[in-house]
Length: 199
Image 1 (cartoon, helix red, strand yellow):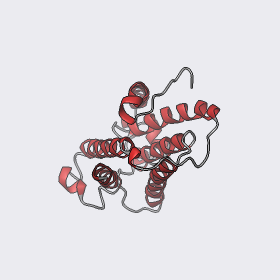
Image 2 (cartoon, rainbow, N blue to C red; image 1 turned 60 degrees about the horizontal axis):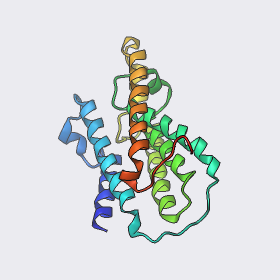
Image 3 (cartoon, rainbow, N blue to C red; image 1 turned 45 degrees about the horizontal axis):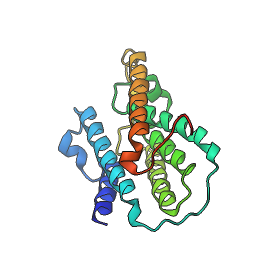
């Protein structure tokens, strides 16, 4: 239960870092990459702790997802990793045309897991992640402060010369690498192995 509490705290800190004053510790104006890395690290560690300790909850099967839905969840997860990677890179076309792309990545990641996990603990966890990310997107659209800077707006107002195809390529490559690493080590990290070729 202690690990679950720590994981939940880290996830909340990653989502609401600006509201909780984390940005002031790592640099509000001149170190956006540092802030993005700190948030990503907090979110990653929190998610690993939460998912890795799901066994503390009783397994209650709510419904059985169709096996073929994995054919949809894998590419959705890949797209999620690419969108998450855009938050760590200079302005790109992806960031310019996909509003709040990192948070949309979290939404895609959560939905991809909801499509393939029908137990109660998974539904609560991944549903909560989708809900939190959806709230961040909603608040951003409403012009409020969000944890991740409004990269889409920054990209739109920045000098077009700073929006490069290289950043798009880097986001795709970084997303592919992250997705591939998680596919390979999903069993060791989360207790459930993945077979990409066999779905």
